[in-house]
Length: 179
Image (cartoon, rainbow, N blue to C red; front, side, top):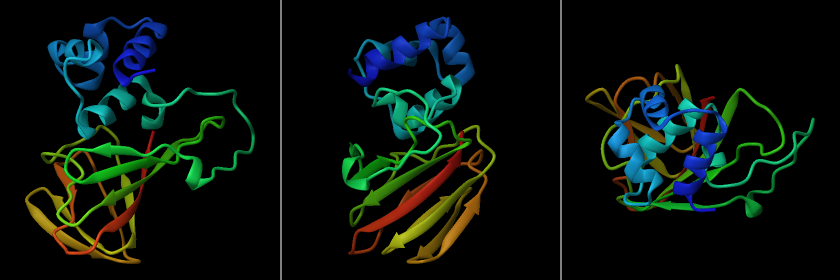
């Protein structure tokens, strides 16, 4: 199912009006309407806001949720890969059959890649990012913080932030956020 249709289906299944979800996600009703009609593609920041407003992992915007299980083993090779504008990929590692209070995502940034087109903020209180390989720069409230392989950073994503790879080698980040 396309993301646009899935968002509308999830919104309606929760009994939310378009305006109600837009307010819960801090996006304009016009923007949400355009997304649901497939007239525009949502940015990473908007996807995060929609997932947060719907109280679902971001992966649920792309895949069908399945019956809950007490233990779930994920195989990275079987996880969906979503290509974003800005030479970036997201690989949601969110459990599909297990309720959790956090959501892990692998972010791959090619040389020159950026997670989102513009710095953004989300409504969750903390994020954790570990640089699995390469190095990246966290733009955080006007400051650029270089984070190298095997280093990790915690930050408050309610402030303007973004990830960028200005280096020649690709990098891979493990991002863990609250749901």
